[in-house]
Length: 195
View 1 (cartoon, rainbow, N blue to C red):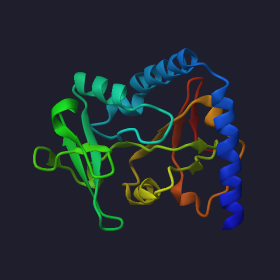
View 2 (tube, one colour; view 1 turned 45 degrees about the horizontal axis):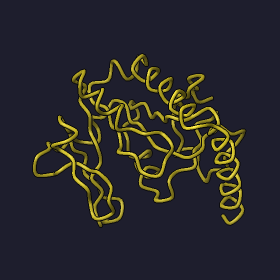
View 3 (cartoon, one colour; view 1 turned 45 degrees about the vertical axis):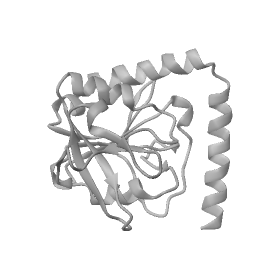
């Protein structure tokens, strides 16, 4: 396990170095290409209910994507994590500014008093954050394991998608289990389907 951690740390350093070579306007242009691909992506267009997340310490800002999705009247569900391990609620939002508030960890999440709860089995497509990926769907997560656990609990019919800059794609990520992989990665250059 220690070897996997060291490898993950090395990968994250390499990814950070690659991304540091870009100016902020260059990264914004790459992000706009990713965003355009999301809204052209058939699985997203056809999905009835889409799971997303508010940005944390990952590279891809989700707020503009969520706002645009709400404008075109997509059903968007966000997680509300609880203090109990492996327990979270899914809440449908309709207004980014009115339905979200900061939790005790300063992460935006839905107000459970205002927003309707949604069952995990109702999710058609789930956007999963990460810091690095390989073409087999392997990912290095944000370190909290919330999304790693979530992947295994999503319905089999749900498409698990991650967004990444091309520079976040690496040759191989060592994983304890391939059941924690994503199905599709959308980058600024291409759409990668897990092989």
